[in-house]
Length: 323
Ligand code: UDP
Ligand code: MG
Figure 1 (cartoon, rainbow, N blue to C red):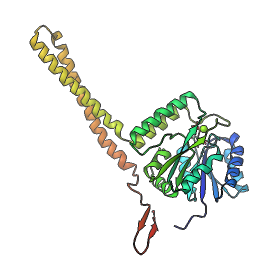
Figure 2: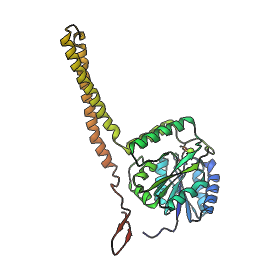
Figure 3: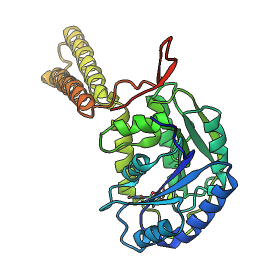
Figure 4: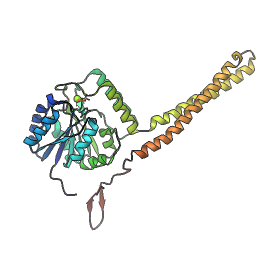
């Protein structure tokens, strides 16, 4: 691999953002002018139905730093970012949203950290400008994520103003699965990560592209993409109910031995049997789940490891060669 000439690639997914594009491009290019590095601005049109595509193509014809990537239809934000990653040539990649919620003027903070050698730079939104519902939802999701990936985690996964090293970008590109949640996936392959505080603005124009249903789908992607633990919950639940059934059965047996009139003609005993059977059912579903989990893990065929560099005495550091 030759040393990339471009130091920083910006990747911006765009879906029906015609009202924001002019300001976005103006502010992003101005912010890039202030950075002391070579940049490219990759605008990925995610199948917009408005004039976004034409505007992107036009901008790419005017400014050599702007690269337009046009997708055939709407594949979703993270697929669009992946397409941007694939096109990017920079040593570092920074992603941001097209609606100007992430001010381009904050990019320098991320670049600084990337230059210091961090593989993933996350960001914490200061004074977040979103609805209460979105903020509360985000809190819950961040909490869940923190529990799921014990240790290696960040405060805020929702902010898309994030920086990645070339190694991490390459690793993410090797993950072929559908429904990727890039900020989390990137953490799997990061050696050093850090978070910086960034400003957050209200959406400049237009509506959020995420409906409640789309948000729920994204959370499911996040959960199932991170962990097979929910499947194991079935087993725990099954053993819980089954165990309760056994104890209840014992209690019913002892109680009815002591007092022959007690037990409502065997109704309680029947309850105990039902609990045990239900428990067995859940536990077997959990067992099936374990196998399905294995199939899931194998079928998404994520690389099991990612070599950063290889060291030999006579040829000190070899950049790794990916397929
Ligand atoms: N986006 C996209 N494809 C989609 C939905 C969204 O490329 O299917 C882009 C959108 O243009 C924006 C970013 O992803 O640049 C974040 O979307 P949005 O601002 O609607 O999300 P929110 O800020 O409400 O989470
Ligand atoms: Mg937004």
